[in-house]
Length: 216
Image (cartoon, rainbow, N blue to C red):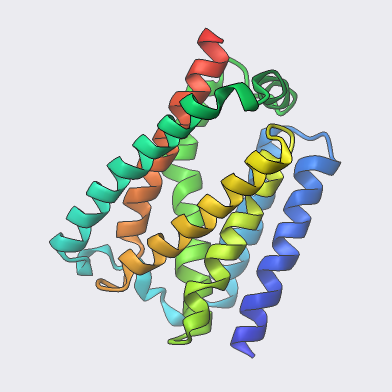
């Protein structure tokens, strides 16, 4: 039952968010509210009895944190490097137009950036690296399906920006990244290591956003 829910609920959530992201012309605030409902509030209510052991950050060993920081630097560098190499294949005009349509302007971007770094990232880690792997228990599926759902979810964000080959490359990279995120959490049993890597990755993406909004 838990595995079935772990497979179906993220699919339904992703479809709903994809519809909101691409089908409805709503502001970033409403998109964030929908995401918080599906990825945070509903799981908190449904699984409160578990007490969420993956949130016990004090149990995280120093070695796992050190590995996470090192991997974070590598991931951030890879994101920026890939952007520099493939920049001519990325529709920055579409990216900027999509951000503007969502209400993300040069004025509010710094506030959005802080939320993405410290709010959005922990929400995604809670759902994709905490709740979903726990639902699959010790099954190897926890290394396959949650990272896959994490990658597919980002299609809703990347769809207007990239051509199909770049989109597939991005989704494939996110799937591999999701597997690495899950593996790095195994030693400590918490989501702190993957959150650290996620922070570095988002920082790299936000630097690209700064370039697109302020210097492009």
